[in-house]
Length: 114
Image (cartoon, rainbow, N blue to C red; front, side):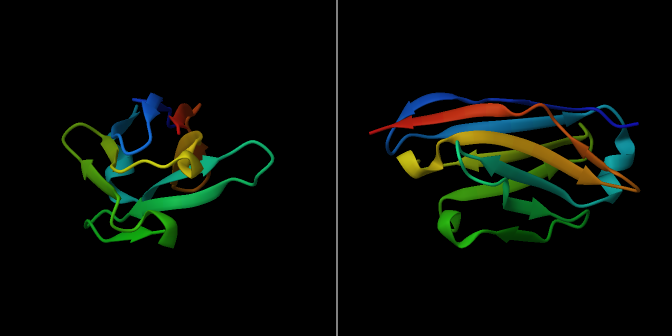
């Protein structure tokens, strides 16, 4: 079993930055794709970005050029650097990894005020 713990959320002004972290309990996650998802009130949970074991990345169009996903396999950790935040980015951000099953973190709240 894998446990994922997100941190780094908070309240920022429009245009500000946050760095989210997701720490996994097992190093096995280093061999698999990890992703960040977000869910705003009344909305479905959608992929924001993901990163392969080799460092290949994908981003939803709305965050391209503003967000950067990265990972540090020595720390079993994936990061999401979020710059130029907009109110539309307000959501709970979740970390996910799929090995044989899906494993989700508890989420961290990001709120962007205008």
